[in-house]
Each structure stands twice: as structure tokens, then as C-alpha cells.
Length: 113
Image (cartoon, rainbow, N blue to C red; front, side):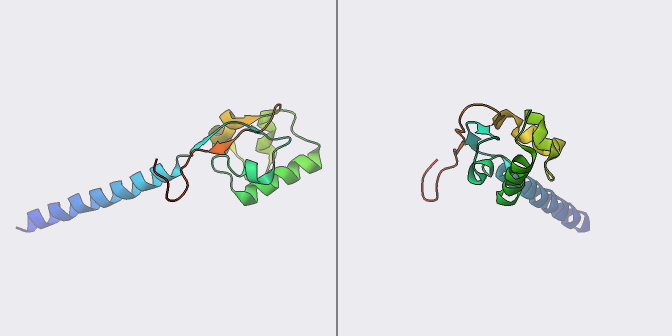
């Protein structure tokens, strides 16, 4: 009986850990489409980028203002808080020319997906 009890708790632990991992993974998937021109976008638009929130968006705008703009998309990695991993998440959404078209595809509260 003791072996069954131990096995039961191991299974429960695996299920709990799996559920937590799945919830974290699902919540980290960004739901945006469009592009962000990092030389003209507002802080609010930049904050829509995956892994970029309001605080880091402010840092991006401050860097842009103080440095005279971004010359390459990779220049955004010069902003404190934007490393290689974060850059990989945002690079497909970042441009240097054209208008900013980014928008959230996540349904508003109360809307069905």
C-alpha cells in the first residue's frame, strides 16, 4: 500500500508541475501582429512588443532620443534590458521605416476568441 501511495503522489506532482509549466508557456505567447517602427513609435506601441512592457518601452524611447535614433534593428540591443533573448522575440516585429501597425490580437475581456 505504501508504494501505491508514493506513486500516487509522484503522479500528482508531475501533473501539477506540468500544469504550471503549460500555464506559464501559454501566457508567455505574445498575441500581436503588425510592425513597430522603433524610430517613430510611441511608448504605448513599443510596449506591445513581446516581452517589452511600459518601463522598457520608456527606455527604448529615451535611448532613441539620446542617440539620435536607431540605425539598424539590432541597435535596439543597446538599450539596457534588451538582450539577445528578448531581441529574438521582437525582431520579426521591429522595422526602421514605414508606419507602426502593431496591434494586439488578444481578445478584450468579455470577448470570445
